Length: 434
Ligand SMILES: [Zn+2]
Image (cartoon, rainbow, N blue to C red):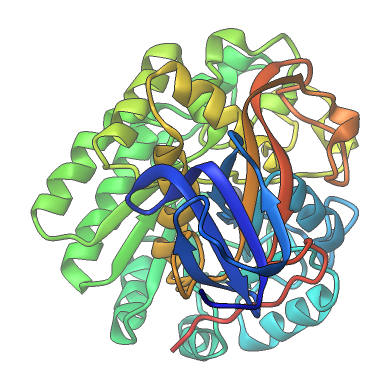
């Protein structure tokens, strides 16, 4: 047999691209060198037998707002990536807004990379931004290695990252299509949004109706078909928009969608009075809508489940739903939150790995991530699928322990994580491979 691997991890529940089975995963120089049968006589410096605990690919979270530099007091690379590592997320892709400067020029990307250098416990890639007037910057950002371009159709929440109108969106998508890039859109149409009529959740929910998502998705899809640009809807909340997405795909638009753990597990009905830790945009809707999102995952219309980890300082979460900062921060909990709900609906770990690892890796073009297969990075997670725990916000590694899951009982615990075959701690800054 082949001698001298750096690491072998054995599990009776290894989650491989073709399903779950007993396997031994052999690692050399940070990559998966072989996937063999469980009791294969492989020799390695370290041989770990997980027994009945599962072995998952490291998760890829393509929707994280780190906020450093500029708003590091909200969240920073050190804290966000430690939370990621603790939650089994071995790669994050950072959003272009909420840090200062926003990542809308190649120069701003360089500033952000410098801020992140040496601070990441896990690997970090970057999205660029498409904002009014930065069309000339998009190619340079693409060449500098961003994985695609985020845009808003409605106000983003921060002044320095304005929304694109239809003409601006067409211009950006035409440019991005020219170099084969990806546009990702926060899809809420400003024409359907209003100021909340009061501080309560019902008023906030009414101010951001499902029609806002439908109208915005229709616009992005129509322009995707018109320009040939590949497009992706971030954090889809409205399940009623799924047929629209299916229709446009059937008509040839290259458009995909993601949703988030909070839309799949929380409901408007359960939001407590003043519970602004539940506030996000688009909003968490009713239980019926939530089940519609699970159907979207099951039939493949939604391909990814990502965190939209979007923290702020706790002071900004004070006040009512009309004034508090919108954003849910629970990056570390995504895997147990989704596993708890998925298993109750009859899904298996391979589904979870597809939604949270290989799906986001494929979306972004993070080749070499998100699968347990030969040649891939040895990003691995030992996961105890039956272990129950109660969420203690104090145990979260994110900068501020604010989470809507506080006190919730979850099933499934991350026990050990490997990043390129080693303990997390020395993450790399990633660039899109040309
Ligand atoms: Zn976001």
